[in-house]
Image (cartoon, rainbow, N blue to C red; front, top):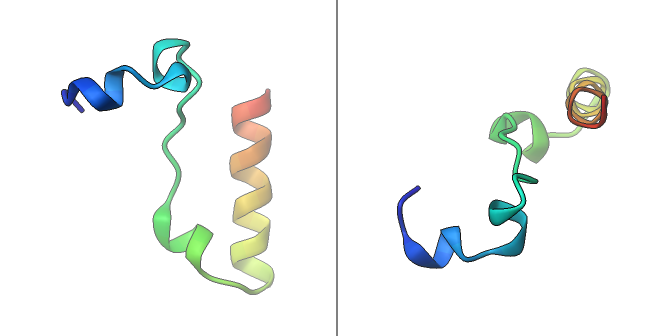
Length: 45
């Protein structure tokens, strides 16, 4: 995103922004929750 407001965020400046699957994070259930855990593990690894 090129908006200066976005680029001024500390997380963006420090490369601490991660793309996730919106639909997974907005749903509940066993499969969606498993995918959330996978996302977190991928980002923290």
